[in-house]
Amino acid sequence: MSAPRDFTELFSSSASWLHGEGPHADMVLSTRIRLARNLRDVPFTHRARDEQLHGVLASVGSATQASKALAGGLLLKMQECTAIERQVLVERHMVSHELGDGARPRGIYVAPDDRISIMINEEDHLRLQAMTPGFQLAEAWSLADTADDDLDRSLDYAFSDEIGYLTACPTNAGTGLRASILIHLPALVLLEEIQRVLKSIMQVGLNVRGLYGEHSEIMGNLFQISNQTTLGRSERDSIESLERVTRQIIETEERARERMVRDARTQLEDKVWRAYGTLRFCRSIQAKEVINLCSAVRLGVAMGLAGLPPLRVVNELLVLTQPAHLQRQAGKEMTPSERNVHRAQVVRERLEAAAREPRPGKPS
Amino acid sequence: MLCQICGKNPASVHFTEIHDNKMSEIHVCERCAEEKGMHTPAQQHKFEIADLLAGMVDAMTHTDEERVGHVQCPRCGLLYSSFKETGRLGCSECYTAFQFQLRPLLRRIHGDTRHRGKSPSHGGAGESGTRQIQRLHDDLQRAVEREEFEKAAGIRDEIKRIERSPRATTPGERS
Image (cartoon, each protein chain N blue to C red):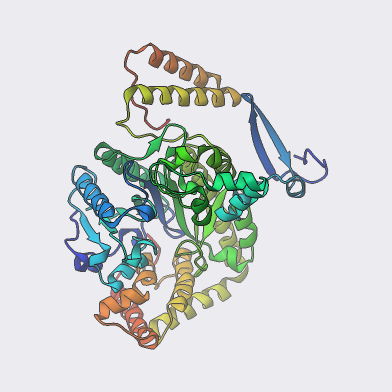
C-alpha cells in the first residue's frame, strides 16, 4: 500500500471505508475505533501554547516514522490547508469539525494503510483512529491497538494507574476508546420500529448519533452507534458489548426487511427504482436529497435487485456530493444553487459509468 | 423477571452493585428506577457535564462551593471553577489536583472510577506489575462471581506466578 504524497493524491483516491466490502457491508457501512491519548508533559490542547502544539505535531510525526504500522504516511498540517481542503477531510470523516477549523497548529497523519489515521491536537493531543468498511470491530481494534502500542514506545502518554489514559474531557478518561459502527436501518424506520430499537440501544449504555457525529441530524436512515463509557471496563468488554448489540440490530433489521418484502414487495421496488431514476436523471439536487435517495437505492442493492449500482458507488456518492468535495473537484468556490447543479452532474456521471460496467446483479 | 420493588411490571433496568467486595444485582422496572432516582449510564448521558456539576454543587453549601471553585492545579494553573464552565481539564496533573471533586463526577459519568483497560507498555516495571496483579485480582473476582471456577483457578495461578517472579512483566490487554 503506498501513501498519498500530498492532498491532491489523497483527494483523488477513494477512502477505503467507503468500499462497500467486509461482513454485513449491505447494512454496516463502516466500523471505527478511536483512541484518545495525550502527552504527559504538555497541557491539553486548549490550554497549550501554539509552540507547544507545534512540538506535539513534531513528536507525533517522528513517532509515526518509528512505527512499522504507521511509517511512510502523509502529515497534513491544518494551517497549511485551504478551508475547502479542511472541509473535504471533515466530509471524509477523517477529521472532526474541531480539528477542521484551521485556527491552531493541528494536523492529520494518514498512514500508508489509509484505514489508520491520527488527528493531532484535537481536543486531545492524539486521536488515533482505525476505520474499516463493513462490520469489522475486531479488525479495526487490532489496527488501532497495534498502532497505539507502536506510538507508545516513542511517546510518553499521560496515564495514571487508577484512572487510565488521561483526557481533556473526563468523559473519555480510562480507555479513551470510542468504538462505533455506521449502520443503515431503512426497514426499521419505514415500519416505525426504530424508536423502540434506539431506546433499547441507549438503555444498554450505547450512544446513537447521525452520519456526521455529535448533534448531527439523522439522514438517509444512517445511524452511528457507539460505546458511551470509557472507565471501569476494558477495551475488549466495550467492543464485545457493541458487537453483541450490533448483531441484534442487524437481525432485527433483517427480519423487518423480510416482512417488508413479503408484504409490500411492489411498493418497495417502486420506491427503489424511483429513487434511482431521480438520481440518474436529476439536473439540480441538494446533498440531503442525495443521501435520502441513496438510502432507497442501497436497500434495493441489499434486496438483490438487478441493474442497480454496486454498494461502493452508492457509498462514495454520500461523500463526493458534499459541498467541499464538489468545490474541490470543480476547482472553484460555488454558491449553493451552483453546487446543486454540479452535484446533479456528478451523480449522473457516476451512475452512468456504473451502469456501463458489466457485473452480476446480486451484491457480492 | 418482575421488578424487585413493585413486583408488578417486568424488570427492564438491571443494576450491579458492589459493596465491600460483595456483588448484588437489582432488577427493577423503568418506573421504579425513575422514582428511586436510579440511573443507567445511558440516561446519565442526557445531562451535559455542566448539569452534572451543577447538580453536585447544589448539594454543597455556599462555602463548600467557593472552596472547590478556588482549587487550582499547581502545574497548569487551571481553577476548578473554569473546568466547571468548560468541561475541559487543563493538563494531566489536573486529575490529581481535583481528584476529590472528579471522583464523584467520574462515577456519575461512567458508573465507575477505576481503569480496567490497557496501559502503556514502557511504564516503570514495578508499577506495571502491581497494576497487572490488581487487574488479575479483578478478573479473579469476576470469574468467581460468574462461577467460572476453572478460569478462576487459572487466574489465581497466574497471580502466584507473577508474584513469585523477580521482575514483573508488563501487562497487555486481558485475554
